[in-house]
Image (cartoon, rainbow, N blue to C red; front, side):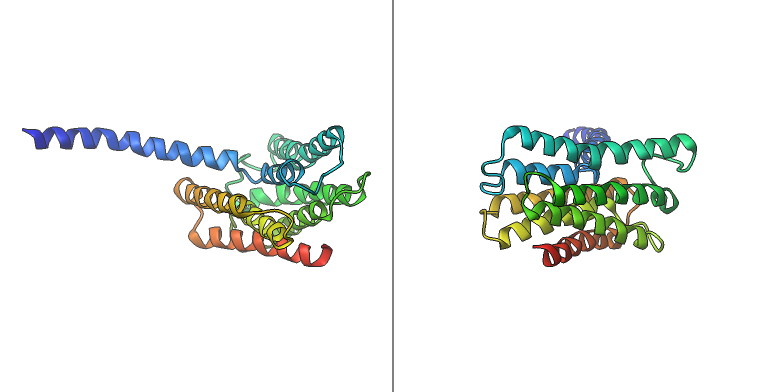
Amino acid sequence: MTAPVTYQQTTEELPLQNKFIKFLAYFFSVVFHPLFVPLYVVAFIVYCHPSYFTGISNGTKMQLMLTTFLNTVFFPAFAILIMKGLGFIKSVFLHTQQDRIGPYLSSMIFYFWMARVFFKFDPQLPLILASFMTAVFLTTAVALIANIFYKISMHAIGCGGIIGIFIIIMNGNSMLMTWPLGIAFLITGLVCTSRLLISNHTSKEIYMGLLVGLLCQFAAAIAIL
């Protein structure tokens, strides 16, 4: 008598569990969308690092965050919407390699400008910001080239960038990075697993994205810091 009831409950609960897992996968994919990653990292450096922004006013910090938001989130997203409206791309979700070409090119322009702003900002900013944004520009350029051959994961690129810049900060011995780096690895695991569950990315495209994001951060740090 008990066994059939257990079986019936299990079969009814499975769809709910699958829906919940997919909901979490979509949630992590949206919250840690590649467009938001540069803003998150800049916010961490500005507000969480104990020494990089010592003596800089809150007004300057807010101005810096607003500039970062406009150039790394608003303008790239607005460009994608314009491309969709004009018929240059089929979907704002950029499911195909062809759809990604225009957004990659437009994002490169905004990231290059943001890196230049970090270099020229008055008062002078810590070079770690210019290094990070230069790496974001390089990452987008590499992703554009890689897009010719296969659809590299942009989410994984963003996660690789987070891990890379946190390792660079840790290597500078300016902040204890045990917890931030541990959280970055956790986020990377959640986001990359989510992409495997709800997108058509392969494991190879995920791993390549992580590697590109990581190596570009290291390359920019070697050249600038």
